[in-house]
Amino acid sequence: MINVLIADDHRMFIDGLKAMLCDIPGIKVVGEALNGKEALDYCVDQPVDIVIMDINMPVMDGVEATKQLLKCHKALKVLGLSMHNDRHFISDMLKTGAQGYILKNTGKNDLVEAIHTLHSGGTYLGEEVSKTLLTSFMKHPGKTPFNEKLSDREMEVLGCIANGLTTQEIGDKLFISKNTVETHRKNLLYKLQAKNTAELVNNAYKRRLIG
View 1 (cartoon, rainbow, N blue to C red):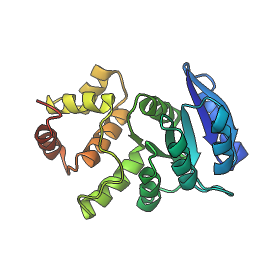
View 2 (view 1 turned 135 degrees about the horizontal axis):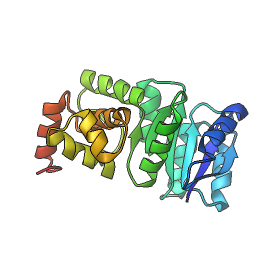
View 3 (view 1 turned 45 degrees about the horizontal axis):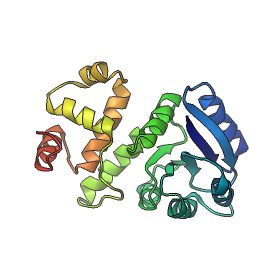
View 4 (view 1 turned 180 degrees about the vertical axis):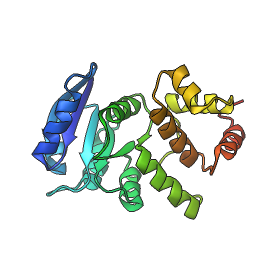
């Protein structure tokens, strides 16, 4: 069971996330916090695997809360959540150690995918977030705000791309949607600092991620 804490200063939004996740096997919303300090206090003596962390909150914002949480709870995973698709917000959150970042208009399937990806040790960026970071990288090459470790799923997608499979073929092979494949593809482009598929595969070979 993946224990999830939701930290957001809007009660209606918390209720909406809880409703989205209530019928997902293996995921349980165990608590809620209306600001970063409440999230810190909750995690002191309660079992939490993933915190869905809003960025803009009173008392203590999500960036500072994430920084303090991960100092004390090394195994905890934080999924940044915001209405802001801005590279500064994204970068600030990821630099604190957050393993993912999604927007508040993210759909249920992507949210569940993000939770599972973080729980398995990977990183997850929403599709629009990936586009923002990729655009930023192309303007400022060499600047990456988080660890470049690839998740198991990203390694699977990378292998399929290297073998010449199309997006549809990758989706069929891995039993995931085309949108999810494209999200992983954008994440791979950013993490491996590539501007297109050919450069992606070439960089993966150089780093011995594929053989």
